[in-house]
Length: 369
Image (cartoon, rainbow, N blue to C red; front, side):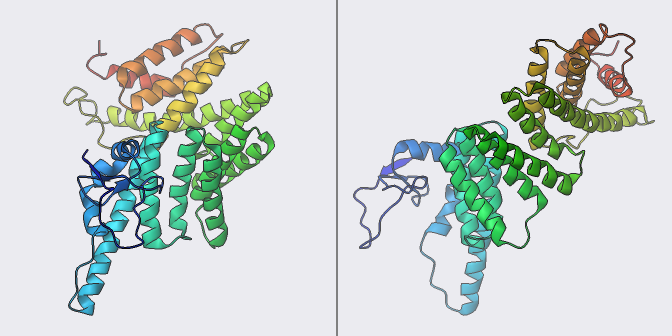
């Protein structure tokens, strides 16, 4: 990362330099691209870590003076090229911001999301529905940092755009209501939080189906609200719904891999050690499953009266989850825990998906005996 002081730069009269992140007066410039400015080295470093390192050189043609065009055709081509570059950078920066959120790195997500917002506004305009996902990323990052007023401002912008547009996908509206629910929960407005989380579940169900994992987050956060209100029975039923949704989802995926293993081609299990080419879970599902299931397991295990059958279900879900993300040793560890817990239950027989999982684990050379 290169830094240059800019206090002595000669600028056209009335023109001021602003920080890329906070819009404050700029005092330093990126020495790599020479077209990006910051109020101090701290903001430059934050931007560099977030996304600037990846897009530094790509910003130069967008932020330097346009060339002289000899014809209208050349001018039109140049403008189209500029828009294509901005669209590409909008996607790259939005993806970077979203990936930081998946990893719980809220502070690193903010600069990349701010870049994406600027590029999207330039391409689509300030009232376009394309801006909503970016505002929601900014809101989620702000919530993660505890900046509630900033999160509320971003959510207000997103909500206003949705109201102004005749169509907005159920998926985006689900995400909006989830963030609104989390905002109100953080502020202690539990009734408003439950209202928005119920809407989250409704729109997620409309978009993906009532039993899809996309709806599990709404149930999970509603359960957290009831848990904070000491409504233990309601919270427990909602946590159970979360576990059931993930169990059904993982069981289907495990069954697919088991059927592949038992096919004539799959029976030669030691012919190659490579995993299936397609990832069973995307990054968002991985992050959400890890967060929800570990949280429910902790609550179940520390309950004043632990219910072993419910603990076993969470352990089973986590065993399948770790197998699906290719962490076979961890999957094996959780399977052992499931068997240990279920031994204490009367007349308990491992269900089919657990048996399939155990056979899949044993198909790996390290566990084959």
